[in-house]
Amino acid sequence: MKFFSFWAVAVAVCLFGVWVVDGFLEMNEEEIFYTEANASYYIESKAYNPNNALLVGLTLIKSAAAKGAVCLDGTLPGYHWHRGYGSGANSWLIQLEGGGWCNSVRACVYRKTTRRGSSNYMEKQLAFTGILSNKAVENPDFFNWNRVKLRYCDGASFTGDSEHKAAQLQFRGQRIWLAAMEDLMSKGMRYANQALLSGCSAGGLASILHCDEFRNFFPRKTRVKCLSDAGLFLDAVDVSGGRTLRSLYGGVVGLQVGVQNNLPRICINHLDPTSCFFPQNVIGNVKTPLFILNAAYDSWQIQSSLAPPTADPAGYWSNCRKDHSKCSASQIQFLQGFRNQMLNAIKGFSRSRQNGLFINSCFAHCQSERQDTWFADNSPVLGNKPIALAVGDWYFDRSGEKAIDCPYPCDSSCHNLVFR
Image (cartoon, rainbow, N blue to C red; front, top):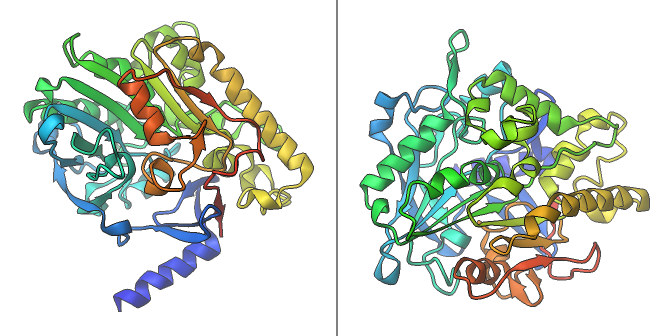
């Protein structure tokens, strides 16, 4: 019965690929996609455990309730923690989970029925792969650190602090962030001699927004840096001439009214709150060393910001947004314009010696959590260096890392995503 139900879901996702909530695409609870690199399917699901990866149990933060630090539905937030050992016993890596945003009451109420809005639906165990792996051959610099994955259940990248009583929605992302940090500090993180705040997608945005705050939890002698993976969401014009992502962010900031109080002051002082939810307007003022890892043709942004169905009612982009090999010359030209915008957004940021970059010309999203893209025999590389080594060299000051790929289609090492 389990075999049947799993493949029933698999077939359904192959057919439909993503959910549409209030007109915005969200990656499904289970994502099935194809990577060109080794002609195989990757299945990310609650049942999937690649290469017999370490399974780490969910810990609910019991102290969070008294602080009002709860998920959208009022349940306790949680994290998965694998203890460090040996040389990594006092080193901490905090990985902020991603998973989009909810920009309306309807979308957030729906989200309460998923792992993105309630710990009732969170997996009791998660596979730790990529930057979370406990194997030196898979994660050479961080394998024996304390590695924590903080679950995401507030819908606003851990920034909100308000509620919607009529809809019974709690927007408490900022409180969840603080409660988790306090709990981990009590469990030994206060003794850290080095720490890294990382995150993927909406978690990558959160790692930027909370980077300096994270730095301030530790003494100055502690080495503290931040990594944003697939978090460089751009305020881009979509294929219809509109701004789909700005509309979504405007909904998030407008609905979760406490968000603007937790955005960087230096940005809020001269820009509107929605603009300050875009990392391009924030990264230049982050004081803590920050590494930006991003695909120049980010697959989520192509599907959900640049060419979503709402901006493409005739379906001209329906094949291209799922599979770049089916894009026309004019569509590729449009996507090259997006890459150029990304490179312009990081110009000032890249001038700082303390910051790092790995911008590869791939159609990908979240490359630090997947083993095949983080560190494997055929991982994506820039200058013959895979992502894991680039991040490690930057973190430990072994070398400066500012790698920017040539435009598509020059990079043959990409693990490009093709959605069915």
